[in-house]
Amino acid sequence: VSHDLRTPLASMHGYVETLLLKNETLSEDERLRYLQITRKHTLRLRQLISDLFELSKLDTAGIQPRLEWFSLAELLQDVTQEFDLQAQQKGIELTTDARHGSAMVCADIGLIQRVLENLLRNAVEHTPAGGSVEISLDQRQDCVAVAVADTGCGIDDRDLERIFDRFYRTEQSAVSRSDSTGLGLAIVKRILDLHGSRITVKSAPDRGTRFEFDVPARAA
Image (tube, one colour):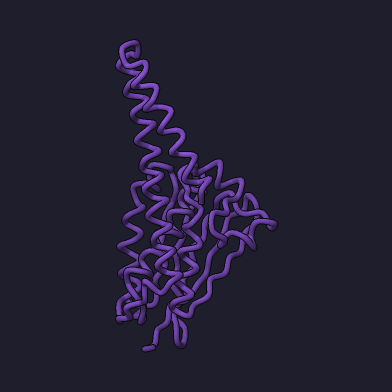
């Protein structure tokens, strides 16, 4: 934690100090560039602190699922729309497969939305132009199974067992997402743990990744 907090703080301090010491000799373009870099680091720091607080509350029972019946298919459509523009800009085909009607589930809608957002964000970020991301629902006896599959860079076997660890980032993740906090998948797993659900992952380098989990379709 201290390393992840210290890095953006050190960078911010360096650029702000440069602005103060060399303000009169810097061009307008240089000032703007330094401010933009500083802003980027403040946003990363804010996201990191936000994720830390969220994970802390999930761990200490500060957040308990507020169960209600809702349509997982409708929630999936709403979440997918959040990433439509980003996918289009990257030249990625983003599709959903919800052939089982509304797919009613009994869960915390806000927490399940967070799970879908984190998984979709990872999929879109790690998929190159010309690739695809598909989210599918499968109605089962007492749950609805959800799969998020991409044709991205994939995950090496040695990393698969650790991707849900806090602050763990694969080499591919470190290259493609310098703003990643390394907490997204840890939050996903903890939320699903609170729902009594299990998440699995299948992946291979350069062949994509597929995450699967289930959401209860029964009253607790």
